[in-house]
Image (tube, rainbow, N blue to C red; front, side, top):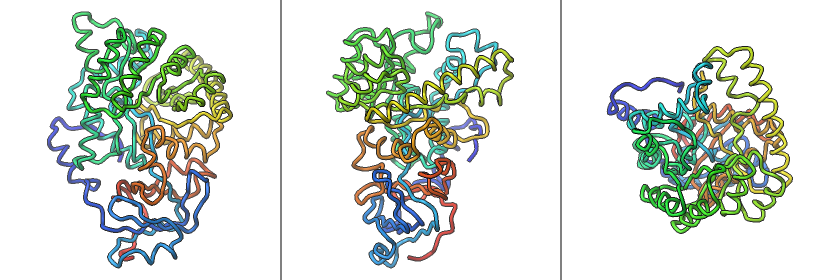
Length: 458
């Protein structure tokens, strides 16, 4: 499914989603899936050939077909994926399903602080919530079709966009990945957008953010999101956010039994997040070896997001706007520096022993690609940055499941786990780009996509 435009009426589009091929249905009582290989990300072992027996939405048995097939009842649905490789459904630990920002012309971007991002963000904030959630539903479906069966949506979704979409997907009203929703992002005043019309500023900001201005407001912000029944708290830590304020967020979140993910890129904000006891640090670009050790000792995840790796933004921008020679030169130099920094970060993360996962942080319109295709390309960037392919797969399966606190249900193909399965033609531990060629997707025991021939019987 390629990117399209929504019509003006909400009801017909919802009806289309509800009746389309991905509409939720009860999974077959029993399904037997066979494939040439099954990758276990935890051990790195490949089972060949492989069979997975599923009852309803739950995996009940995994093993060689000769052992598993006799346990399938006569009326079981049989899916033969030939020589493909099965692996767990992929997990995007840092998603933005309610942003699809188009890079503005160069002259317009130069007029604003954070000019590539902020204008598109403002357009999203002031748009109708109904239009925005429909866009989110489209991007969610695109993620699912590319094999991303779970996402943690970390802000930029309006007041209740991600919680509403999460619930609609869970209820089977629209297709999409399992969503862990964060509601509004917690920020200090002055983050992301500045110099708004003072008569309207608070109203605009309140549609997207909860403002922290002291420890009391920090706790209140967490409670407001908890009232929206969020799954995770997202807070942006900049140099203006104090340790007592962030500590209050973490304490209140944990009192509500909610994990806290902290956007922290610079050394100072990373240290604040560590000292406050964050559950995960998003990005962590400037983390020092000493900070990585502290994170390891405290069990804090680093969620790596190679979104801008190797000039990604320039590459998509060149398809949308005309860039001056000076801008191209500056962008290339910046990309080279960023690539070197991220390559070194990946190397130090692997040496440190810190827990790590990965997120796409995709919020950009990538011409010619669905959101899922663009997000998978970001994961492949981890391999280009020097991370072994198996570790990349771990970062978006078992590691991500633990970071989300869902390791008992998702992240691996094991008895008792939810039946989220993805198949690719080859072995992704040998060639990570295999992840860009998903041919089969199953979520909750329901087939979402199957580009292979399916046998009619057991």
